[in-house]
Length: 172
Image: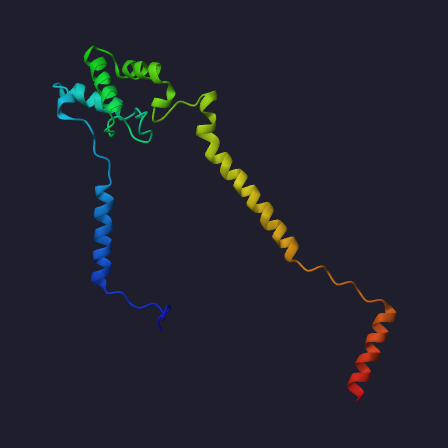
């Protein structure tokens, strides 16, 4: 016996084709670095350092991409600036600090935990706790509303009257 008899069976080939199409779409949506060949440094080690630094810096135009993944003109300028600083002898941290001094902690994809970023770091957890409390309170009120009031006990006179009615109904 089929569990879902109202659902028609779908041929395996259709399911396979659908999964393959979904997988191809997912793979095509991955980020491709926007670094152009004219930006690449000749020294492979220095280029690797530049990619590492720029992958941790946010594009202030795109906001959810690193400057390494963004095609925005400002991201290109920042990539070139990072490469210039590293080629001039700066350490990775000095190059990052130079960019942060100009744009603030917002330019970091992983900003430090500071007083002005507390909401960013702990806001989602706080929102989850508040939502859980609101949902619990709502469900508790719903249970109170749906619970019928308890029946009051009959007095002795009411019980005797009810018994008399029942006896009359069964004796006829």
